[in-house]
Length: 411
Length: 89
Image (cartoon, rainbow over all chains, first blue to last red):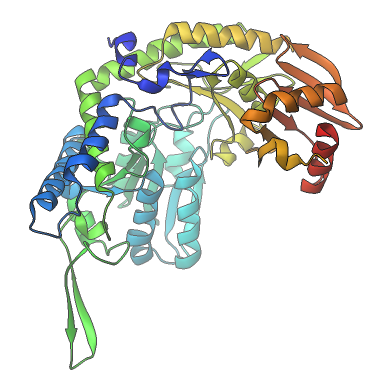
């Protein structure tokens, strides 16, 4: 088991007070806090190694390049990818999914083809596919969700056919914390000749994720939800698929050669090798360095320990939240199929009222649709409040949170 | 003449079907803003003197001691501005 009290010492922000109260940060599904190791790595990079990568022969550029490439390698090992060729750095999960939608979708989808997504997806795994379907005339089909928020596997898998070209599913729902059996769905996609994309934004930071075991063709996740800085994320893709794809954006870094032909008065262009083919322009070098340090931090703790800690907190929180007058928890409470995300409401109060009330006591929770409006419509909810845990949260924080929740119930 | 800009740092529409508006008062003016509103509007309920269920004319809203307020069922931004202007004057 990990020691959250020892871990907390690494997070400077957790020492601050909000509205006169010690900060309790329960909005980790939105973004995580950053340990001093990550903050120092970013500072160290800008103070000692800052330069553009893959451009110059001078010392600083070589140091920056080495760090940036090491970051790709570190991330590749973290998810058990073959190597850095399979780990494209992007801005975050949203950009990773858009990259696949545009760079693969635009060239491989046509009228009559189908894209399968679930109704529990974050908007970032719905909207890019709707945009691409309008351009390519392919059809987006939505798999149903059961009343408890779990995926209706039968309905979802029945949608997958030879017409299906890609199946897109979140590994963990950002609203309910429900863990989907993506391995099972990936297998069905492949049996039908379709590709499978897994949104790992809520799984990679919280549990061991092995791309070889999942066998997904793409896995998208964000650095900022796993102790890293904002503006850096990862698209994992199987090497042969990434190689077969056209680039997403054009510019520097992603080309091997741009040669002007005076006879044709046009340019002939060849693409750079992976992963740079998909990283046009000067990349977020510092973000990559910060992400590398975040990955190293998580590896030192051990992802099995991260998962076990969050499971312990969830099991601790659920009965205490249920004990609060007027509190209602949405979705399944079976901790064998969910991780540290709990959506809830208080009778008679909007989720924003609940969040503002908690904010008064220094407790940060998210309120609203959490970028998953279709799922809220299924639950017939106008919005929800959500607590989400991470490595630095403690049972004492949950005790304080439920004390305040009881006060809200009296309002 | 008091303007809402003197007190209000930002107004945000909320995410969700409710379409509430959250008003955040300027940090150095929040205590004064809360005091003025408490004097103008009627307190229906409060908890520990930090959360207030309030009414003013035909509007109901919640005021938080941390310097925020949440308004419901407003027609548009002008209605919010007029309301704030009256509450803070």
